[in-house]
Length: 360
Image (cartoon, rainbow, N blue to C red; front, side, top):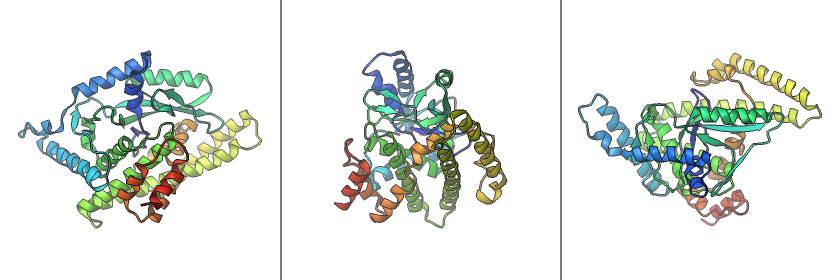
């Protein structure tokens, strides 16, 4: 799943969401799974072949459609032939949709620690999020969790991976995405369809995030070169993303120290609010010297809580582990992915990945 973590910001990654809707529906007929599953099936039923966008050459958006179709076809070919990701019918169909996101996803954490709230579903096991196609349903779930004293965050997602159960489609709002973002999204989700370890949400997310990011970089470099405007725009976006992530990780570390300290819960919550407010003020004051674009300006106005911050622990808590392992193993992304394809759900997946790379 590829989510809009916050308005106007680059997307975070979160795997397997559609499988929760569709796979779980195969096992029991609960109201939640039926409702979400049938909505997703409705989208899949509306999907048309991607090439059908080329059927009206005289249309006002014909040139945009042509560029979009050609870009998707090229990225899919790159992902399978040059990276070794699983070949499938994913992203070969297209759905017109009247909004700029696919679904709303709820995440939650304890208010005075980073203890992650999880849901359990058949096939995928425990996952740290629950998705809804109707935002009103997501808000109801959020209110229920808030009554339990949890910090809750709702984010929009722009893509799901069904992990091979169905052919994942593209959506009309994706036509506005920069090319590097399209490449990241497709490579990220195709990695989920290629490698997915049940009950290993954090590993799945971090691996897909790394492969999507590095895969998109290699794609843009191979098509345009390192001196191109396309490559520069991508690198600028990645630098801003890295700067934002570093700031958030610093805030998380500061709060983590508070939560593990001796204060009582009311005092921790009071101190937590002060730390977040001070961090937002500091962020705003240093913005001009820290970022190249305006994409992250809204942070100082966000109602930041542990539910929001826990997303970064989920997707990026591994630090530079995957990047460092990639460097040590020779910077061969196809080989890196081939090693990941050998992993099994049992045992430590990081150690298993390291061992698999040593054997190749």
